[in-house]
Length: 510
Image: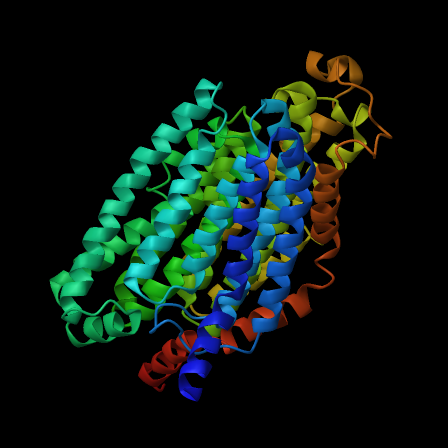
């Protein structure tokens, strides 16, 4: 009986954060049934309290749980904790940005929060899934919620078009993953645990295993929006509600990289040369195409869409390194991307609420009317471009140093060159806001309400903006402690330690 009780304690402790999210989701649904007024009053604080409690529960799991729970289907190691914390942080900030936006659309707040929390639950489960069945259920939970949220603005034709495109491409991706998973299931002889999959792939490096690798890689490429699996990204980003795009750009992408770490790094470690070569090609294509095509964009959301494609290429450098420094740099960059990207989206939401536009040309002369948006968007874009001393600069430096140290010279050189290209279009937006004289400003900005000192308006949205900008601006000073936490993430993940030990053992002595 004592053994059963300890086993139940392990299972419960592993999924306590997910339990908090599930409870919050159910409460939001119940409050929404009570009517629009109770939902508008209680859903925002309810979600904030629930997500803060989730972050506290995740902090308690740090350096604590490293054994698989639920018969090997889920693990709460440091990697899982770190990535789930990024997902929860992206959800909380996205919700803060959402309330006034959703209120303006006339759609129920409780229903919106419930669907977003369901997507969060799927992303969190995906970050710790160690079984093919768990991976697929979590992946579909996240995907279905994302499809619904993309088309949430029912009166907007572009939102419906975005949801349809996302659904079609996402369904194809799910089918590809299922086919690859069925091949892996056949290789194991009837076992779905990732540990068994890794052993089966290692013992039988057949064409079937390589075919399964290609299918899994296609699914990962879709989730992280890597070229050439990026086709859905610009249209979905442009048509979807902007707070939903903010969550997809960070929360969904983080879950995609968790899938890459669990499947590619762990299960296909014996085929590391093959998938690292393919990932190198995808990373280079993503960095080049994302940054070059972003130069020609006239919509702020489409520009940020192509920027997110390029940013995925940067993170992939850390995965291809195959070293502890590379994995730590990838986790750190995902955390930095959370703040600088959501800070930029907070500015875009504030501007669109005031003007109804997301055209880059309409930002001309904005510094005259709204210094807060101008300053916040400028700092976040400079950080995305890797300008010191912003947080994004140190995130890229750690990635490039790790890549150079592991011999990934081509990727690092491409990353440096494309970072310079990205600075051009980021600076172009800043120049549009700051350098343009009032007489050259767009008609949208001329009619912009004078809210220069209106700090009390839209408090949750402005709170999210100020918080993200503050972390982006001063986070570079704290980059070393953050990198130490990223090191602990790798050190506290048995799966990564095992892969690193095998790689070190197989390294020839020179």
